[in-house]
Image (tube, rainbow, N blue to C red):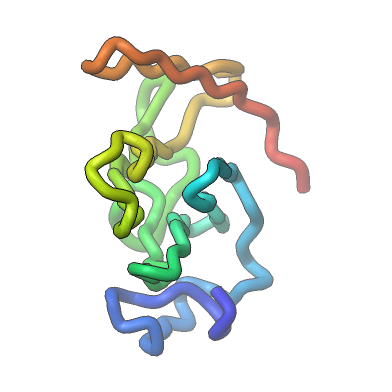
Length: 134
């Protein structure tokens, strides 16, 4: 978010002050591999999924927690709420299965310490959940 905050849509120059500024966000998770990195940054109101790429730079688009304003970190029932499921591709990598990353992000209840995803391909992903620090 080098321009001062998350963008509202695919126009990287359009900002909504209600979403906050860079200072309101912190890194929640990051994944790096040979193709690049994907990061989830968030605030009390929402999150931005960033997958920077030289070939297809995506602007940092803001999404409210729960997908509606004003955003609510705790506003869900149950143990897990999925707020985004996305597939991000890196172009120029041929037809290899190494040119994309699947991203699932959301919120969990305070007593959840691990989330496991079983993909339809048979792969499994585990994530350890740590408590947020102030």
